[in-house]
Every structure is written in structure tokens, then in C-alpha cells.
Length: 521
Image (cartoon, rainbow, N blue to C red):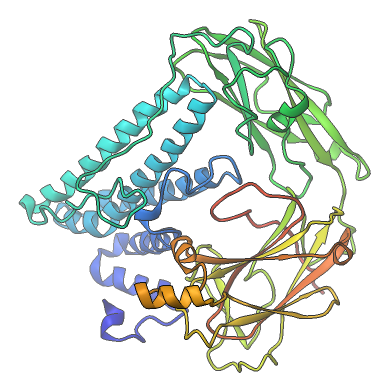
């Protein structure tokens, strides 16, 4: 509303300052700072995707701990908003509930509901007993969501009654609003029924893979022998090195009516697990185990595959495979992002930013913001480049450079923003941010959409994703640089990912890679 009165009220770099001033004007000094932090944090997480477009599979429950990370951010915001609500006077609680607490709590309940719906379906495919517990959590969250709306409507004797009456669950594949809230696809397993004795009553699932033909009877495996042959991908982790995530996880679960007592052993002393034994009781939560490596015991020239054996006293047996590489970046190499988990992921703001470029910290889907050209910059391509150094260990013939661009207003069909790419010292290549086909122009005239191919999906995801194959001769193990030159101020660069192997699907892509700072004099 402030920008409606004066579009210059909130400058590009002044969003947090504006929220600080607004909170100071409207809330008690004791809570103003925290209230501003809630508003700023909520603004960033709400920019990920419009609520009505968030479905059970939007945020990955298998890759990059994406769903858990987003829910963790929302939980932290909810905790802070709840503390703000509890510290204000009774007279101010209604306004704090409306402006601070409700948006965060409603979003947390909604996103948590969608994530648990996704897990419920996954667990049911894996025939986990815990699928039924999640089914009940779905119904509980469904009720909690409506309880929150009713609480809002009761405020101040019903002053804002019916404000939240519009249904918001059950949109499906159409933009037409549902007539009442609905959730579908809740899955159950028959908990009283044992699994086929061939597969046993203990199941194991790893991070990054739901399993090969999960929940099925597989000829290549039976309960007293581990998975093998074409089932190996379902029990093999992504390769781990000293520059990636500190651990991988796997889960042990029951898929029958009996109690399971399990034990873990590893093939190497440097493999560490968070739990070595436990008991699974039907109806109780599954066991999540974190597996990590003590890198002090792994020399730089060592690489291989470790095994993790999970056995139950009831006779079940599964074996997991953890590929690892001990390489170390040479000491003289600094100021680089380092390969891990099959990629190098670099935030666009993760390099030295000088004019004519600038950082817009409150744009895009990432906390790191975006990089763009200053409006006064020329469009003739003579501007300097953004330089992103990185270091790889892999040799591959199928590397891909993936660029994430924030959404901006599409321009006229004849003015498509472009950018230049350089990899190491190779020739420059110029690429459009999007293409404009005759079909896109016709669709624009028919529906009023911008004339850009793929605009609908990009607008839903709030990002343009552009993929560029890298020739093998351009990418060998060692130091490299990607240079990007933006040729238009209507481009927001968010993230650069060098994919050295196929990556699992996720909404935000891989998290930032490990960075070795430059040496300072």
C-alpha cells in the first residue's frame, strides 16, 4: 500500500529498513524488532511459490533435505511470531494475530500438510506402517487449518467474520476456485497384515531414492540377502566427499505387525552412524539414521565404496552402499566453490559484485537475492562479466551448466533479454532469456499472457531455468571459471549450477556448495 501511494517509498535496497520503520510505528518497542524480522522472513519464504500452486510433490522429500529445510524455516518464524504475540498487551493481540501470527501459522500448516501428503504417498508405496500415522496427521492438519480460520473469524466479536471463507485446498489442475476445501489421495496400508515372508517385515530406504520397485516382491532380493543387481540403485547413496553435506540419512521401518529389533555394522572404522541399534514397534515412528565419514581417517588418494549392513533379530538383512572420495583441493587454490554430490552450486551473489552490476537482496527465491545490471547500464554488451571460479574432481562427457533467473515482466516480443556465457578461455556464446515462437505470440493474444515460450510454468515456479550442455574438452578435473555477462537490466540472475551427473528433482535445486575463501594479504 505504501508503494501504491509512492512507488519510491521502498527502494531496492531498503525493504528491511521499510519494515523496521513500519513495525516501529505500529507495534510496541519491545516487539517491533522481532515483528519486523517475522515480516521480512515471511516475505522471503512466501516468494518461493504462490500458495495455491503448492502441491504435495512441490518440495522434495528425497533430495537436498528440501522439504525439511523449508518447514524448519517456517517453524522458526512461527516460534518467533508466537513469542511476539505472547508479549503484547491483550488489546494489541488481535492486530498482532492478523498481521504477524496468522500469515506465518497458516502458511506453516498449509506447507506441512502438503509435505506430509507427499510423504504419506511415498511411505504407502514402500508399504511402511507409518503411512497410516501420516494419514492421521493429514486429517489433523486439515482440521487445524480450519480451526485457525475460525479463530480469525472470532476475533473482536466476529469483526472479521468470513474474511477467510474462500476455500484454499483442492484447486487441482484448474484456476477455478473450489467450492469447499478438499484433500485427496490419502493412502493407507493394512497394518494387521504381514508382508510376504520373502521380503520380510523390516524395510530400509535411503536419502535420494525411493527404491526400485518399492513395495513389490523382487526376484533379486529376499529378506535374508541384501538387494543386488538392478535393485542396487535403490540402496546406493550419492557419492560423498569432504566438501559436501556432513551426512546422508537412511530410514529403517516396519512393514508388518511384528516388532523389529535391528543392528547396524559398517565395513570401515571411518564410517560413523548416529545409531547402531534400535527397536521398531508397529505404530511408532520410523528410525532415521545419519551416516557420516571421519575424514581425518581418509587419505586424499583414497576412494571407494563402504558397506552398511542392517540386520534384525528376526532374520531380515539389507546392505547399503556409500561411495566416497577423499580428494583435497590443493592448498594454493582459493576463492572457489568445490564439487560435491555431483555438482557445483553457486549463488549468483557469491562473487565480487561491482558496477554496473548490483545485488537485489530481496528478489527471487533464495535468501541470497539476485544480481542484475543497474538501470543506467548500457545494452550494447560492452559491460564486464560476473566471474564464478569453481573446482571439480570429476571427468564427465555430459556436464550441464544450469542457470536460474528470477522472474521479471516480459518485454515486447522484439526485445528479448540476452546474456553471454564464457567457460574458461573458450569462445563466448550468446543466449536469450526465453524464446518467442509464433505459438507464444498467438497464446499471448488469446489469453493475455506475455509472449514467451514456457512463460506459464516459469511464472508458477517463479524462475526461468536455462540449461547449457558443456563439452567434455571444456571441463576436466581442476580449476575452472564460468563468466556471465548480462546484456539487459531486465534480467535477475539467482544461481549457477554445474551438473556433473544427473541430479534428483527438486524445486530449488541443489544447496550452495562449499566455498574456500580467497587468501587475504
